[in-house]
Image (tube, rainbow, N blue to C red; front, side, top):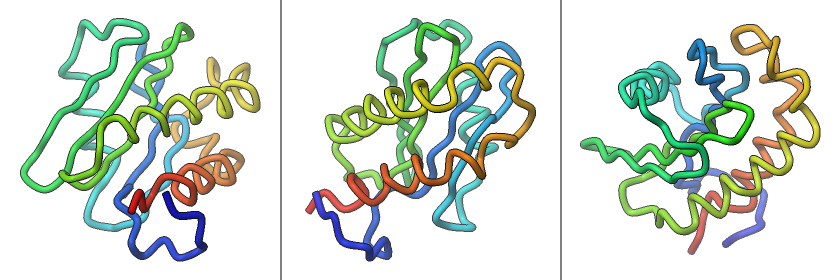
Length: 135
């Protein structure tokens, strides 16, 4: 995993934190205009029986969505290249859960659409910086 500041080779295209109860995207960071958070929201909404702590991967034609739900009902997701390792994706998500929960957890219950994106940006950027290019 690279720790360079060059995210152009990143295989993580989008990170989103979604409140499962109402599918509100409370924080997101996208590294491309080609992939939107709506695809993540639809993927999560279509899985009505998400089990807390279980890891899910959905593969599309051009990318994969990796996601899991924490005990507080927040769904953490990464949209990655198809070749991106699910093992690394879920290592990144575990770190995201720890950092986001510690810093912004209490605010997430009442957060409105994208209201935590700006304050969460350093956390989300760090995930892309640390895990974006696993080569």
